[in-house]
Length: 334
Image (cartoon, rainbow, N blue to C red; front, side, top):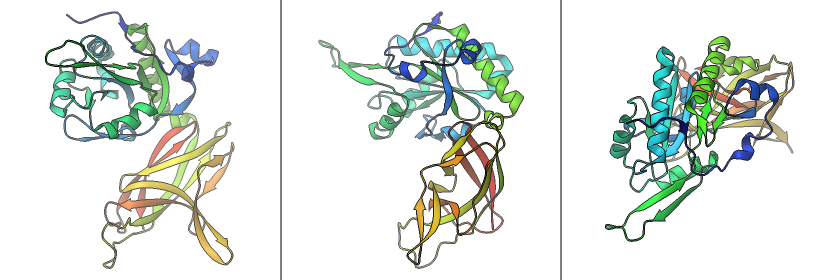
């Protein structure tokens, strides 16, 4: 029998993150709203199905993110059963919603075990598990507290995992918008997901609402040289013009590319007769500002290329902004 009622939270660790939200957000959302919205920390983990999951690849969808483990006797099944009911009630709109379940028990949650667990509730749910070293940064990024407690007298010895079980709603622009705390009725979670789906449908993406526009993206060709040392991180430069057409300031804070291990914003400067490239932590964008990346000035440094880049190819670039969230574009290699 499916549990009904409320989504349950074991330990509520991040209440301060959603306090003080504006009256407009309170009126719109029934759960705890992040105000202002903030970029959801991107992460990559192996999915239980064997594929790689990357949060930023789900832009355009509402992502429902929660944490738990397959050996949980009560809380986790309750949360997943509630989310399965929410998804069923969404009807055709459910195809634009992705439920993601991150393990807090890497010792027991093998991919096969976790996939079997999540599929009991909904076959579209994605279970993510990995090593402790891979999972711990994701827990920390979302304020999830995890503590193992041995069960005395159990034979064979076993344990429970105490953990935060918040449900996070991430909008189509990759921004944290809502956290469902302890006692949130599933009707309220459904209501808030529908609001985010309506926003995405009416604006195309929340990033457009913030009026950040990317123009003329391109990447300089990068071919692996025969004398490159094995393991050396090959690099390439990417260029794009960022326009803030909105009435509020924003800031470029990070970027990713599907062909690189990591991406940094760099500025080329002349110092003491030498040309130097320096990493830039953030780029401020005042209302109406136009920020042009061009050779010899600012650029995106693609580090650790996974393949050679030759003219005519296209690369997926994702720029992350403080307010607008993530915006993805396709850049041609020249």
